[in-house]
Length: 422
Image 1 (cartoon, rainbow, N blue to C red):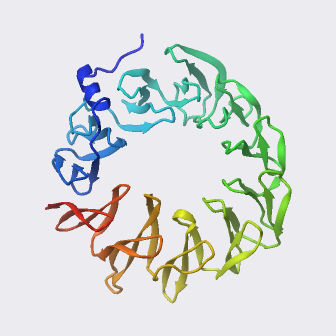
Image 2: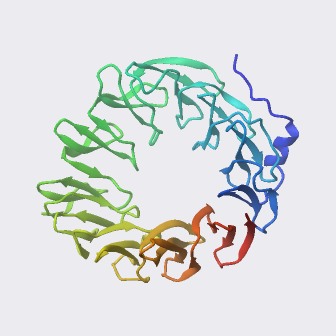
Image 3: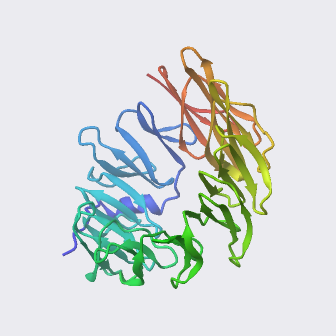
């Protein structure tokens, strides 16, 4: 019989999901705390060893300092469960995947147990049901696959796999068959929709996936038909207009995502290339240089071989170059035009209200290697001044600064929300 999680009372579930939520911030530095956006202390520092947001402004996980396990609490800091869990993850269907005593189970948003804690891996199948494994996924033995329907009924599918399960996209999940050691794609019922025949199979992204045969990598559609012949060393599907196919000896071939016609080629000997996360730029790494290419094959910028470029927020680029002994970095627009000063390092942290934000750092003292850190926006403007504090992001729109003296929580207008002295 399916076990049920002991929720203290139905009233607690009412408080969690029926009363309008108050925005709260889970702070986890040297001390963990739960703070309202107005700076009110909801859970005082040190009561728990760690506090993490599970469902924004609704549900938080707090780690018991004695047992090391987590309990769930609401935005008011009220405990809803005992300290039973090791990890949490919000699934695409809005339910909560939890790990308890080394086994996975699923809770619904009201914290009722809908899948018992007896599985080594669980994925939602996109139809309100689940596929799951019960045996050790890391050993060399075959793992029987189970389907759990929306009533909680469990049935074996007859399929055996040799690895963990991947999330479903376009109704399909790539999996490694224990029968022949090849990859194929499972449907929502846990049966092979595309037979296991590939040396590698990636997840579908907007109707297409990367699949690999012994001859190389190509692209298939959801019926398993080849859209790009499997002959490349590497393929990046991306999420824009271009699918990038790389042959390390012959260069880059850019395919139009809609027609699969060749849009352009680049005859570079190269180490690698990939599509930016925004899908509008290609980053190419060759033995003698690094360059950025637009979707029409035009070179936007070129750096020396020691440089590199990564995608920032809202189409921005983070450009890194070697300046003597030290690397420097600056923020640029999508055409490579500088937007910021040079820093030792720039890292994207979040986009908030349509604006991208970055943590930046530079040396305070090069000899002692002491660092100052701060925040800039996607125009290069400083929004949190550089200071000798360690910077972290407890929640989008907020920054935590921490040093030997204490913790300070700031909003992006540099307003101090809350401070705690050690």
